[in-house]
Amino acid sequence: MQILYFLAILIGPLVKVLYNLIGNYAVTMVVATLILKLLLFPLAIHQQKSTAKMSVFQPLMNEIQQKYKNDPQKQQEEMMKLQQEHGFNPMAGCLPMLLTMLVLFGFLGVVYYPVHYIFGVSDAAVREACQALGLATANATTMQTALIQAIHNGAVIDPAIISADVVNEIKNFNTVFFGMDMCDIPGFNLTPIAIFPIIAAVTMILSYFINQKLSGMGAQMQGSMKIMIWVTNLMFVSFCFNAPVGFSLYYGVSNLFQIVQSFVTYKIYSPEKFKAQYEAELAAKRAEKKKKKTVTVEENGKTVTKEVTKGEENKLRLEMARKREAELYKDERTTPLQH
Image 1 (cartoon, rainbow, N blue to C red):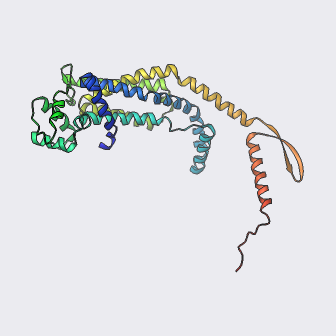
Image 2 (cartoon, rainbow, N blue to C red):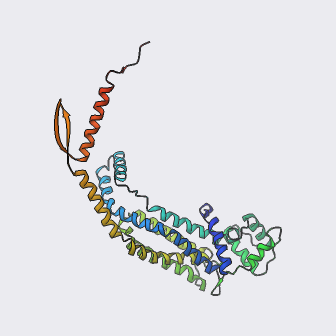
Image 3 (cartoon, rainbow, N blue to C red):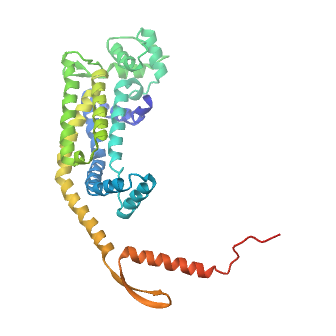
């Protein structure tokens, strides 16, 4: 699972720079969350547009699926033709969701392994230091925060394992917020620190329903997609209870930002507005295809004038091209030479 934490390589140094300016781990996490959400905001707008566009083309896609349900190859060809003709991609709205999830895992990596990602200490050095202090466990995710708390309590680390400068940085690393340590893991216990994962869970539910309503995604999603989103959200809520509470702080703030973002994107780029725009564009393209024009063709040696649609015109051109090609190469040898 640690492979999913790769964005922690970027988020960790960001947290350290912000901490040096702010001086409190919890407030730093809030500010870092807001910065990253603002950076992802253009993608949220892109997703809103993609959702509106999909609301127009979804009935057409359903029609193709029903019409060619017994011919998967033809169904795929018609789907590709529809996408190319109208310039839309059903997967375009997935990128913001994917990036949001990767950022979530990035923050999870930072709060699980703060000594590594924030202070740049190798995992091997952390394990060696924990072994020297009797803190080593099979669960690597709890050792790093345990090491920070041990150093706060006066534990001495061999400079050959972790340099004295870094140990001093960790010693002065302020992880307390309203009297609670952001390195603690709340678990499913009724303690004061449990307020953070509870807030994260409540804001997740509010964010989900508000976003579905204002973005227009709810009407587009199939049952399996809704189940997947719920499972993903519940997975992150479970992390809030089982990870250091710094992650709950990030996730709760992220959800609150998402709620505000949903109202802002709806105000500027409402799904209804874009759906009407795309429907008008689709109707104009269909009208253009049906519009007839006069063409002159040769049939049985006679010149004939016809009224044809755009599609019929393209077919006539293709037939003429094939006839010319056949005429051009009619005298070429079509059987292999005999030896």
